[in-house]
Image (cartoon, rainbow, N blue to C red; front, top):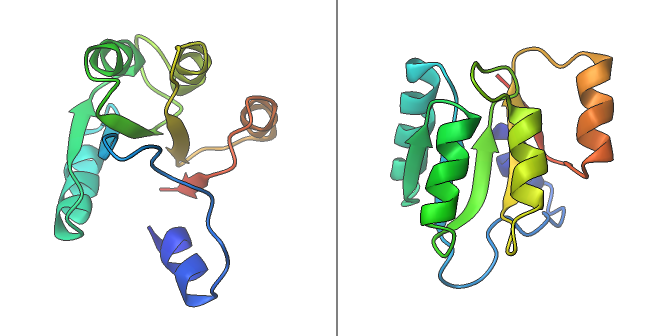
Length: 126
């Protein structure tokens, strides 16, 4: 949110975050309940609807059920079951993929290169 707010303050054009008029829900994906709760509360205070998933597999299932509502997936990278990189690849293969933003506390050069290769421009540190 700090990066987004800084763009607004600097009057820098931000990339489109939520595509289409009906896709206004953000899917928050993180295995840490405190992070999910914090992000949900932050979004609620700004009038944004969100749903939560604990890993990539759950997020993919939720997206497939509600693709018409979900315009942005905000995902962690390091999670059990299905990590964020796998989730991103599978979401991008969907017929109408959402915009994806990444949040992570550990972004080593290897992960950064994968994100760049996948076209992920928005990376938020935790």
